[in-house]
Image 1: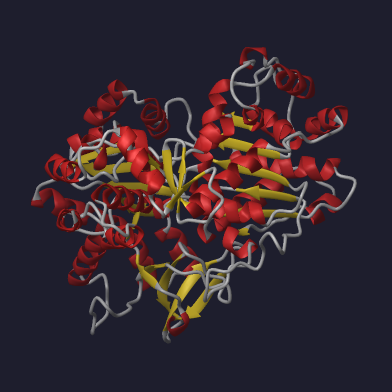
Image 2: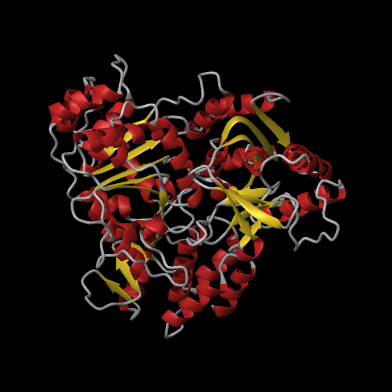
Length: 615
């Protein structure tokens, strides 16, 4: 069995750590348990929370791929049936079921196998979102307050429904696509909460990344200026968001957090933006640090990519929106908002359904916007519209498609990208201010699915630097790929609170006047900060960035590059996330078959959260 597992490592089906962990857990070299524990480790590395035992079959092992080695591994395991698998797991010293009080590294819960930590985290999250959901409020006062911030309308305003729902729930979940007004909803929600409170609320705004926190700060500030707020209300409402790690007091040199179950956060209201990016582990850590009776609101887009780490908490929570609302909830919301919501009454589903609101109307894209229509078609898997859009795309259109696969097409891709980035380089050489250069650079972004290879972050950044240098655009006499140069865009890869820089922040290396090179960043307050290159935390060149890293950002023009050979990382959610980063123009470079297969492939995260919430 070990030799077969090593063969799977060579095929990149397992990591060596997966197999090493399995060997440590299996004392008697049981081939079935070695395979199952390797599978569990591999599953959690790619985002799953658990392994479904009753689904274990050769065609399940590697998503139906590599059937030859799958069959070999399965036969070496004894071609077991489900009963045999459960029998071996229950007698293994590394596994305990729910009736066993001893602490062991693995948990068998029903038909699911977990690492102990993930099982506890999932239970904590499920319990949190299942209990203490009601918030007592003066409904008549809320109704009057809402008239301050919402114009009367005969058509249902889902932003108003979302605010009413959030104010009347200790925990609320608001999901909406691009341009549906999530920031506007947050601003009006904050104003409503402050207006209704008889005390000075402690309100915190957070997002998973520094980039997302910066964007929330900028957009929220401009939206709040449009509201008719008193000076007292303005003093209470926070105008700056921070990262979740900063809120929890993450330490730079270790994984400990200042705030936890023994040292709770001091807050009344916590609003979490871009919640789809939050992993199960981070959600559990956040919940542990929350004081009793705190008011929690999660916002995001449930159709976007899930977190890089294990779990899809926001997506799992939003899945219950399909059950509508209970009769009592509809009665309450209808009374507060003056909207007839009787069509949304349902007796099915768990109580959490009454704490969820989906924003339906897009204010960014009009009914004729190709980007908006494309995003909707991707969500709905409307392949007829997608094929029509892609086959009729042309230069100058809002959405354009370019075939990618041959060397000539790759060269054209590089030419197009260099042309789009040359604009900000020209601004550098005619001495524009750093603020204007950063704004110009951030108007266009190249997004990719992969990190490695010629179509990934590393390969494209290398090739673009090479072309820019040989075209004379990068003007650095002693240039090598390991040195800095004027105009180099960089992404921060590690948090450094002392510099106010966080993972995902993007800056550009420019000359400080006529002197040395410095890294320039735009902070959330609009100020441009320059930092000595020697003080920068870990970073990398970022002409190209992954779609995952782009979450929480928007760009005027987005170029999406997919490799000519399909990869399992390409999915409907990844493509949708890339599409919705674009505000005015989207350019896709891909093999048409790879793109279509990606659009037909949905990301699935294995977990037991929905089951735990339902029962």
